[in-house]
Length: 118
Image (cartoon, rainbow, N blue to C red; front, side):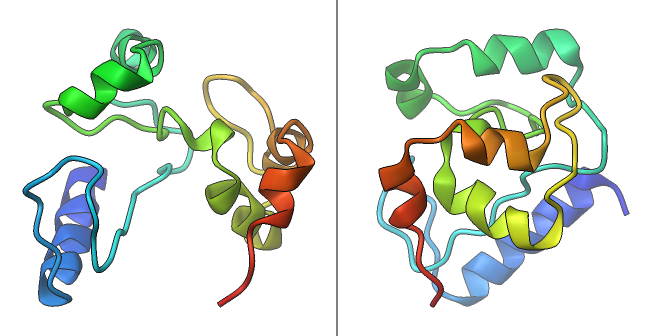
């Protein structure tokens, strides 16, 4: 299946669990994100860099009009990277070339320690 179809399925699951997409980055009952899809860069390298370099305050006000992969903020999020260490520590980010292991090592220790299993 394509990344767009997979994302659509993830959104359907969120809806089944009561997710309502009225407020960007608002409270949610369930949040399923598509972080990466192999080594694909979507929509393209230029589009990826445009979103990655957009200041966070501007990201909060607008959403991309299409899927951006890999997730432009994955390298900053311990809650994404720490669990990925368990399943794919050697996966390489298709833009930066960094492995999950390397990205985790660059995170603040407090952020890593704050990630707890459910």
